[in-house]
Image 1 (cartoon, rainbow, N blue to C red):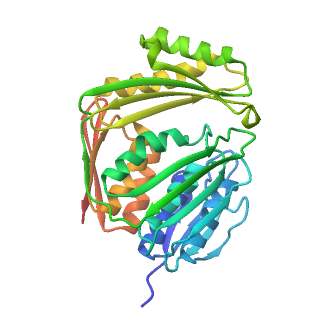
Image 2 (image 1 turned 180 degrees about the vertical axis):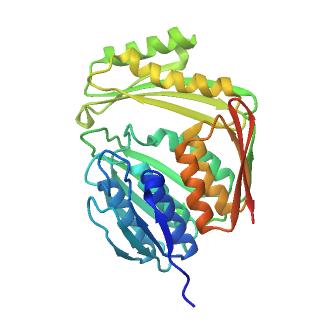
Image 3 (image 1 turned 90 degrees about the vertical axis):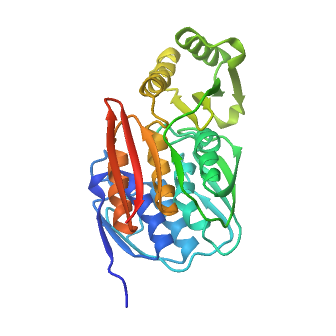
Length: 341
C-alpha cells in the first residue's frame, strides 16, 4: 500500500525546511509535497543552491520530481532507492556547497557502498556554515556518532565569484546516540583571518581586534592568504576547542563594513555562547538535530530556541517516529532531547 504524501508548508522557515525534507524523504522512502518555499525571504522560491540540492537528492535516490526549476515555490518529491556512486554537482553560483552536502549525507550514509561527492560553488558563503565549520565542528561529532565521512576543501569560493570546490568520501555507516550536555574542559582557542585578493592589512586589523577584545596571544592568531584568483573574499574564523565539542564562529568581510566590525560579529556570537554555558551554539544545534533523530535519540544543550531549530523540529517529527522535547534550564540554556516515540 502506497504511503500518504507528506504535506509541508515552506513558510514556516527558509531553505532548511526543504533541505531537511529532502534528506528525510530519501532515508525514509516517504514522498512529500512542499508549498510556499522560502515564502518569507526577500526572493521566495528555489535559488540556484536549493535547486542543486533538489536535483542532487533526486540523482542519489532516483526520485521523481515535479516543480524543480528556479524560483519555484512548490515542489513534489517521490524518492526511489538510495544508490552509491561518484557524484559531481555544480551550483553554478556562489551558493553554498556545504548546505548541498548536508542534504545528501544522511542518504549516502545508508547507501549500499561507499560514495565520493564533488560539489562546486561557494565554500565560504555568509548565509551558510563555511567549510571550516563542517570540518572542525560538525563532522567530528558526526564521526563520534558513527558516521564515516572525510571532507577535503579543494578550492575556496567566496561570494560573489564562487568557483570553490569540496570533495567528500562517505562510507556506509549507522549512526548511534550522542549526548552532549556540557563542553568539558577548555583545550585551545584559535583565530584565522582568510583573505583572497585583498591587502594583508585587512587580516592584520581583524586579528588585532581579536587580540584586543578577547586578549588572545599572538600564537593563537593566524593570517591565511588564499589564491587571489579566488577573490575578492574575506572571512574571520574563531575556534573554541573543548573536551567534548569544538565550536567555530565566522564573520564575512563586506565592502561597506570596517574590518573591526566584521570581527565584532563573530566575537559577539562567541561571547554569547561562552557565557550561556550551553554545549553548542545555535548553528551547530540546527545541524545536530537531524542526525540525532536518525540515530533514534540524543541530547544537547544550546542557548535558546531559534526559528531554524523550531522549523527543523516540525519537519523531523513529520517524517520520523521521534519526539523532540525542549526544556528551559535557565535564561540562556535550553535542553533538547530526541526520543523514540
